[in-house]
Length: 111
Image (cartoon, rainbow, N blue to C red):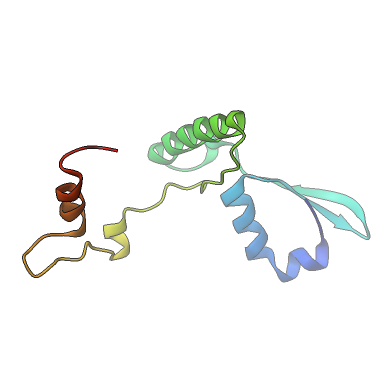
């Protein structure tokens, strides 16, 4: 992808997010001539062992999806658990949560 310097300046956050999430490199052009490349850091330079493991798993999944002809995007950074985001299962009046209800319906089968 190519982007002009003025567009990059005005929407830098958007382009940085795109590089971070997709791993795609962006060529920066000044007067329609390439002058720089905005690209993601290699996995070993990204902080945290947990994130390195996530990046390895992400790479494995993306290669498999590409081999199968599936178009897939995954975030470069491991998503936070839902509880950290303040998202909790809904509790029914009888005390069951969503996941317990799903288990009950499935009868213990794992699809």
